[in-house]
Image (cartoon, rainbow, N blue to C red; front, side, top):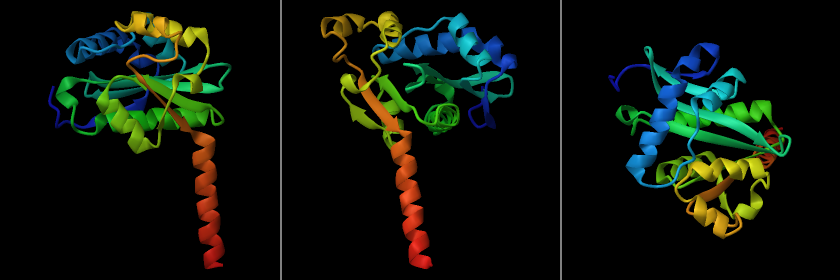
Length: 197
């Protein structure tokens, strides 16, 4: 793979299902390389997100080089951007930021009133989230949906989460509140408009 190639970032659709197994391999290899926890996903689960129109892919030619998906909790009150991965040959090119940005936009268009959140042990993802406007929070501000926390069972640090009754782990919890961002921008434009009137 040539990292200088033109990478297309797309809303995934049925034609991208063929990449599900490769995506799972990329996620697993990244976890091993970092030596930190990451929730494993099956090709079937990745396929379901692609078919639901809830995934972003980065494609270079015919190769998958990046991925992220969204999932909802508590009837759309919370949305998580999960599974962010970039092929090692394509890192340090802001590709992960661009993928996450697209996932955030997808979340906002599908679930405009939801709190977008994530948990991660990755410094790179933390930095991306900060740049996008996320803020760190305690786990008590995240979804209480047991199905979300069940997804952590594939992580090597799951025992920590269990011992603390889901109050903390090695991951950092972060939230992006879309309503707050929209209101702030609306207020800003209103002030600018009134000044110029």
